[in-house]
Image (cartoon, rainbow, N blue to C red; front, side, top):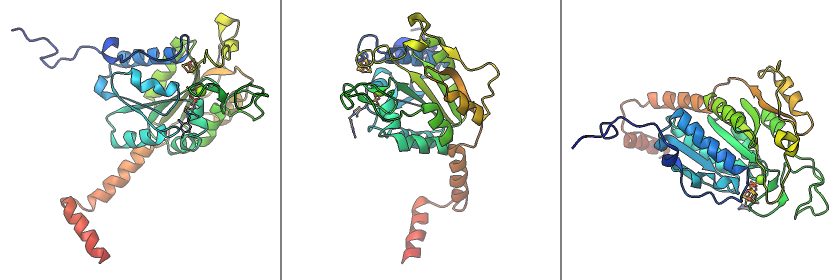
Length: 299
Ligand SMILES: Cc1ncc(C[n+]2csc(CCOP(=O)(O)OP(=O)(O)O)c2C)c(N)n1
Ligand code: SF4
Ligand SMILES: [Mg+2]
């Protein structure tokens, strides 16, 4: 019998069919579909074998993401996706870890993890599918809901100043900070591609409309709805922190593109150095002997 090229060890390019799992359970028209389809495109474009694709998420509609990817994935605790993803990233340098989540998952319950993962510069790509609302739990105010937004928790209209994800990420120490929208798949792919090339914590805020609980939220950024998709100013220098911060302060819908990008040693590289130095002291010794020596010291 003739051997197929697959049997002979030659892998065929990754197909969409191979990486597609289950039917997404999102509402018709939900922006999250667009993010998922671009993720499939990125995997195919980069030809990443499915066993090397790692998708981590928290809890929320957007965080159902890993269910729909035929590859390793984790639907983790609400707000804790980044802590799990950090361990994965540091222990498995052969993988590129992708983390997905919503605005509530990222900036409410997961707000502290966001800040610390950014400042530690753990190598991974984090895409926040920002719909300005809690979708899964049916319309509560989220940290990015605009002032005056009427929800089940603020039926008189939101009173609290919303988080600006770009400013938060820049000030926390993220080394790649970008913004895009589900309505512009080409731009979304461009941002995800650039984020994946970045050696460090790459963060993307992707506006992703919740058609069920905040329809029309992003029309002003969508040319098909009479809005404008404004790219970063042509002379923007992404290494200029103050300039990035200033652009992030523009009125909604603001700008789209890479706001900020710098190189700083990753937690992965720094920790690898520490581990290597520690291990070199015990070279050639069995783990149980090292343990015994330590126990002996405690006696
Ligand atoms: C510890 C904990 N607290 C609260 C909840 C309830 N809960 C589930 S998802 C969610 C918010 C989801 O909003 P977001 O992260 O913006 O995702 P979306 O559904 O909008 O994509 C909340 C409060 C939970 N599952 N676990
Ligand atoms: S509730 Fe909103 S965010 Fe959730 S699936 Fe439906 S449209 Fe998408
Ligand atoms: Mg949300």
